[in-house]
Length: 313
Image (cartoon, rainbow, N blue to C red; front, side, top):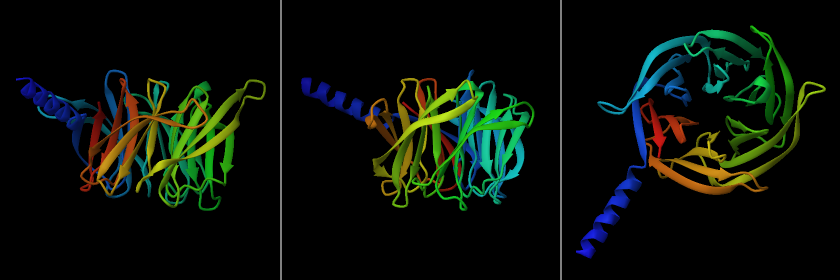
């Protein structure tokens, strides 16, 4: 009898490990990474690129009755194309969307929660890879990109100044960091963390300590450290801070066809892995990561280009 109970316990634990995530599928297809963020009330915002290269921004929900599916109730054409993929973040009361065009121009746009555009900012840095965006203190927008004309990783802090006006409070390029593709930025309490992969696909975590100077109204980088992590990714990794204060990183393990997600304590000099989970991907064309309601969510396009959102338990 005890043996049967032990066997049943082992089976239940094994099944629990197998189903440590919830997958939501959509009817949307794309050839690159989608972008994902949430607002209060379980509202989901998804951005993707269609077969013509046009960027879309949609608002919807994750439905759990009658199957796990993504329902997009409202979808707008942003009116721009990108050779890479867009990025999303929740910025105060607005949805923040960032992308680059084929000519290298970078765009940031703020939308209200009904996905009506309120402002749009444009740079001309010759960005040749996907950009990443994140909110920061003092209503700043942090974004990163790489440029074919200026090798290295560029970190920009943009302050919206009403309408389509803006001011850059920080514009720094780090030529020692040369991402193979795009990068992903996450912010928390004066930290801006960028994850990227080098030419050997090794994933790096670069931590920037930021300080806002009230006297000059500028943002300074106090110091920065870079750590090469002990794993590789065939696609650009993504990151987000969790409510537990840890940094979450997601990447694609092509050899195992697994999407990995791990949390790291970055409070010390060297990032320390806290936990890690993975799930079968069925192929991956690109992914994004965000944190909502105490759980990490991964959005990715599978081998057929179908966008899938996964809640990792």
